Structures are given as structure tokens and as C-alpha cells.
Image (cartoon, rainbow, N blue to C red; front, side, top):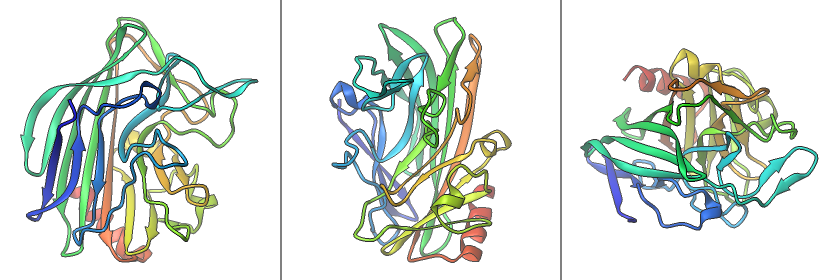
Length: 279
């Protein structure tokens, strides 16, 4: 299965969603959004780039779920560093419970080691904000499904400082120049990465992405942000210690992303975030 769903906003196609991609196992196969574009058609995601072939547009990826890799690529092992392991999991599409032109609700199973570790309900909706901006509202609920306590980790919890990625993740296009980075209260990659700012933004050639945590629980997660090495933004479910999930318990997060044509200033970005989160 490799069918692609087209999402629309204000009557225009703005995102393609592949629910059951056919991928190498070491990419941790999972559904993804790509391409995502501005209303004017400028691409703002990248799929399987040469620098990180396991980066799949926009979606959910966690490098350590009870020792299983749902991120792709090598696993960071304490005292060994990045290590190629046969520990990759798969996010399986179980079906859509709602499917509209502007969004969907999807059920998924996170499987590894011959068993289902997590059940996910994923809700994705588009919303128009202006003639040149729209919002992607992305909520995921991960419920422990094996009947046993488990935990989420990251390279940071496994011994690599500054690498607390895991959760919602958006890989943006790599261009000749690094994207401009700013947040609600600071400028630059160093200030935004690891912060709990209300929102963070990347601005490239003809586009701006503004990412906002839309619930109190989501806003507790620090931002993971890269610009110089590659352009990408995500949340950090396990920034400095493993996130414990009791048997049958759920982890729920909601990230709203403003997708705008052109380069936004801080005031414009803030205004659009407020409108998007309230939509």
C-alpha cells in the first residue's frame, strides 16, 4: 500500500499524506506528509534527503520506544555512539475513521519485536488563516497497548547532549542559505533549540513555518531545532529523562504549524499563531 491522500485548504491542494509507504526497514516505515506547500505552491517539506534518508516530511517519529527505533537510521547507544541495530519499528496504518478534503482521523499500530507496543489516534486538519497563510493542526494520542509499562527515550537520555528529538517532527527543505530562525522572544538557532518558547519559526526562500504547542502538556516539551546542519523542527518528548508510560496510559500532544508565503516578522508570526491555535 502506497496510496496518497491530498489535503486541501481554501480550495487549493496544500499537502499529500502517504498512509502506508513502502520503505526500507531501517527507515522505520511510517505515514508522512509530503509534499506540504504554501498556498502559492512553494514546497516546505523534504523527503528522504541525502543527509538523513530516514527524514520523512512531517509526521511523528520517536527514536526509542522501550528500546525500539521508530525514528529510522542508527540508534544512539550510551558509550558506543550511533550504532546500526536491527531494532526498527513500524507505524502501521489501520484505517481512517474520518476522511474529508481538509483533514482526517487515522488509527495506527506501532509494532516492533513481533508485538503492538502502542495504538495511535492521529488527527490532522487544515485551516485557512489569510490569503497567504494556512495552518496544519496535528494531534497525536499514543496509548500503551502491550499491557506493560514502557518508556520513551531520546539520544539525549541515552548520553548525547543536545539531541533530545522525538515526537512531532518536520523536515524542511535544505537551501543554499540556512533558514532564518526566531521565536516568540529570541533570535537564532542557539536560542530557540531546547527552549520552551510559545512558538519557534524557520524562514527560508519564499516561505515561513511557525510551530506552536497548542496544549499545556505540549508546551512543556522543549523544541528541537536544527538550521545549520539541516532545517528541521520538532518536539522533545524525552528531553532529559525517559518519559514513562504506564500500561494502558496515553500520551497526547498537539502542534499547530503556520505555513506562510514570504518571510514573516515576529509580530506577523505571533498574530497568525494566535489565530491558528484558536481555530
